[in-house]
Every structure is written in structure tokens, then in C-alpha cells.
Image (cartoon, rainbow, N blue to C red; front, side, top):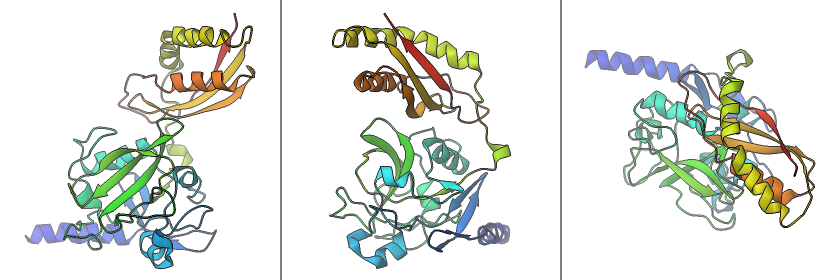
Length: 301
């Protein structure tokens, strides 16, 4: 018992030793906590970005739970030097606490350790072992009606599935010891928990080789040719180049994907190519981080 108390004291001191962060945009100060290699805000973001909401439009809820954001606003709401966590960021956090958790999935036993020690209903408070202090800020499906404050906490991921759906993490009173991985309509209003950008010299960029990347591109080239032929039926003779920039996670999934430029003058076709590439899958890697290639795709008869 004495040894356990000593360990708890060390952990508590480590949490308290983190430097608070003051957002220069509005001078709000946030507690922070270092968990493994990551530094997280230990409070939900409360920056009054255009379109963000207080639960029930009450400022007192913003002061306690932070503001609620739709996905588009969430992705630009964190201050300089911080960002809305991607699926990969969330996965790192989950697996640091429970190494048995798989990427992008329900993670058992983590929620109770990240929840605040008070503020959850029905005696479903957490132990707050890591100073993350997750609170149940509720949600809004429309931005005008609100629900589930006190028993649901939902936090956005910057990663998206398509133009309408993005990913999030959730903690609940029911099955309260884990963290859920949830697909959500981008119009829903959730909380945001910012994570600090790693130092530039620690960014594991482009950890996949060009050969690895282009092998998958070449394997799937016929899919894009088929899409091109189908669109030629609607617009005969069109041609051009579509340049895509996308992120490949260590697990091999494509997350963020954007059209950098196009000369086809056919936006519907460009988006069809983007959607197809977003479904591609690479082999998982165990060392390194995200890889973000920029690849031109040429189309002509």
C-alpha cells in the first residue's frame, strides 16, 4: 500500500507540473497534461469561433464544458501550435494507456482513466489518472437543440470518411470504462480537445518509401481508368490532370485527402477520383508516423 501511494504521488506531481497554455486570441488559459509523447489540453476548447455554441446557449456551460463545434469549425478552432487530433493522434493516446487497443476501434478500460474525478452522473466518474479530465459536455444535432450533457462526452477527430461523415471519440455513462470510436455527421456539434503540435524535429513525415506508395497507386490504376471511361460517356473528349494530396496513417488508411488542382474542368469527375483514392489501403507499418504524398493523376483517351 505504501508503494502504491508513492506511485500515485509521483503521477499527480507529473500532471501538476505541466505548463498552462494561454490562448493569445482571447487570453483564456488552459491546463495541459503530458501523456506519453503527447501534450494535450486538459480542458475542452472554449474559443468562441464563428458558429460554435454553448450548451443550451448558456455561458456557464461553456465555462465548465467548453464550447461545441461542428466538424468544419472544429478543424480550424485550435490555436496556433495546437491542432484538432486526427485518428492517428487519438490512437496514440488510446494505446499508450491500453496497449491492447486496436487502431480506430472501441478501446476498453481507457475511458475511466481519462474521465474527470467529478462531473459525471450516476456515480460514473473516472479516476483521471493522466490529468485529461474529460467531462460530459453533451452535443447538438442541429446547433439549436441540445442533449446529453452530464452523461455523454464526444470529441472530434480531424479525420473524415467522406464529404458528410467524420470520426470522433466518445465516453458515456453506459459502458463507461471504455472509449468509443464513432462515425458522425459533420453537422453535429461536439467538444474539441486540442493536442499540441510535436516539435518539427520529431515529426515523422514521409516514413513510407516512394516504392511502397507507388506500388499501391499502380495496383489501383485500373479503377481510376474505369471511372474515367464511365465519365467520358457523359462528357466526351475531356482530359486533364488531377493532383491529390492525402495522408496515409501507419495502419495504412487514407485519412485527410484534398484536390490540390485539376485541369479537367469536371468537378464531379475530380471528386469521384478523390473518393476512390480515399478507399485505398496500404500495408501497416510499425515504425514511423503519417505519410503525406502529393500525386498527379493524368487522364486522356
